[in-house]
Length: 416
Image 1 (cartoon, rainbow, N blue to C red):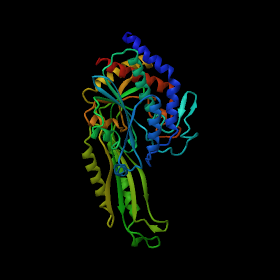
Image 2: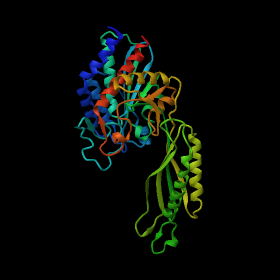
Image 3: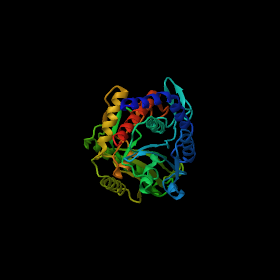
Image 4: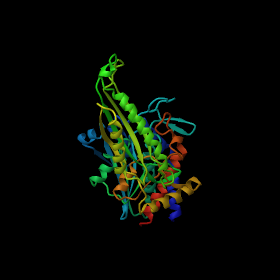
């Protein structure tokens, strides 16, 4: 068969399996894998079972409990599928099965995988359980072409991991550090209408201010940690306003950001609060030095708190995620995905950066040329990612699967 005929095999195979891909994704959405709390072993077990039903051999790599607990999770099992077609490069496809908790505001069951007007609704359906389906069925289509006589060289691995929402340290980074995978290229979960080649890094800090409790009838005998925290927060927000003058040269990324996302403290209504704790998220653009960012921010916090006698401040790093930046070799993935996306989607997609942080950075940090590409709309907002009523247009799922399948076919065929 000609190469064009074999590419047609990929298309026809996926067209015939659309309902199977939809059911596969629905089964993944129905199993909760909220992180926190990060008890994801049950989801990994179901995903492994579903992959085995598709004919894959699935490696289960449970992370030792001490590492799981240190990462703030309850259980974590990484799944790896390997399909070798001959001598040549290994291409890893990575998606994460852990998701943020549903939160409030849902109009339907977040674990119901409801189908309505060509969309599936559920937590994780777009970010990024969808790409379990994208990559699994893309690999099945490549295997179908090989069965029809396609001469391919190299291998494809599926890396399905469960700690992206808390940093990826015991997911992709864990697999790479232990030599369980040594890919030459990587495709990480993304959306269908753009190839992501860069993204922000991220710093999470926990800030604790301690004062001295006292009766509310005699507040002068206490040291009000909340009053001090209010001033420190005001100084932080003033610092944040200056970030707008720092600009990234990467399309899709603008300036650093800072958000205080959690705060707690106090003892009771009638007690001077002796302790306040808050956590902040500082996004780091690719041009910034992440260690310098942490140093400057920590110093600013200490200087602000020092203005309050009797108040002590402690800063603890929760997460420091390296920015994902373009690297040599990435252009090979970009070219083949852009070409196939134009053929399948009927439009030219663009390369871009995003202000998120993802597991892609772990592959890039290990020297692996990496891009983000998978199922989903043009923006995270369109999918309600990390919001109520998260959803995925199923046509985008199926089209992205074909783009990935044809791209894997082209990359492997080039080696034969």
